[in-house]
Image (tube, rainbow, N blue to C red; front, side, top):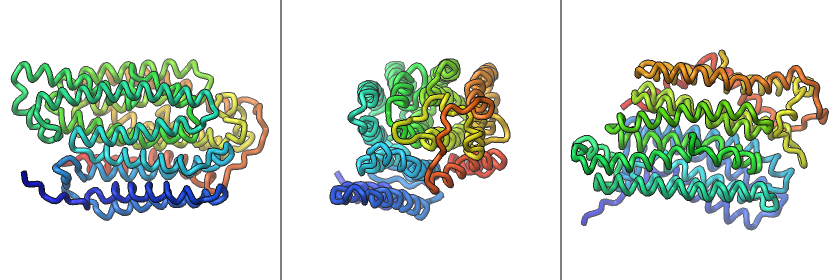
Length: 482
């Protein structure tokens, strides 16, 4: 067989991140505890370098390489840039938290970079094999990050649950992929799409394809955290150190969205009528379970975990519409969600200090009297998550609902609005605690200057994107245009 030399240039950002992660791992071995900032700075420089490479190599037309198993296209480039941005913000938010709990080690940053590399591979995957490789690289890094706090029984339990359930979902996903390969004879996404479109009429092949689709969908929705495959999210979010929860809650969701797009839309788009109904059920369950159970939570990390499940339900609404408008609305939604959620967990870290986690709802009582500015930032973030105008969360929900209505699923849009109204209760409860309750903890807030600046920028960005949403909406629409 004749194999052409692969073009390495489209994968230059991935190669750069891999080389730097390995280099930082070695450099960190020789650093003293007081010089750990070097590891942090190198990690941030790696993300900046990857962003510059992604922008510099951007092409208007999709570029395929490595036997068509890797694609560089507009959607991939936009999602990667937001993965770098979210990860860089997370690393900055986490620094003080890790230092005060003696977790400020190179492992956190190196594992974070390997997880980012896994996300990048998932975003650019164009075959079942590269999707799975990216997913496992990301997942294994996250399992290790959750277990970093070795003297914490809660963190160890969360890591074990995450690992066992993650292994189960990976097995289901792999089983589904093997069925797709068996039915189509290819691992390549484009070849699978062509086989489904032209050769999907044979009844036996159709049955295998649909069964494969079901298993693949279960595996993917577990990674996203959609109900009823959501059981790991509350325990992992609660049990992991807040710095790790912050990382898991943000960028991996963007990568999981990319995996949905590559597999469901690019590879199995012609089976839309088969997976549309399944995705609708998953969306309704996610919005219902997420919003209703969140009301009963007294721990903010668990509340935000159930909130994540409800947001995943909204994300799935755009996907099930089966239209370009719906896909771009979902892309807009997941980017906005990542910005909002890192802000929410960032506020928990801002209020935390050594020996105090600030992860209970009561810890936010009277925050306005302690710090009016950061109470206002939290108010913006909670309003945005609830979908209150003029924050960007309102436009994210509105764009998804418009796509669902245009696709003819009016009852689903009505249901989504009802669940949003229910969800508004637990977000607005935090605003009530901050502004109308007496503070129980009067310890002054002492975040670092960089944390204060970035937290303020995070909150104001959510407000600014709500007032001027068109730029990001246009970017998402252009990223998905052929």
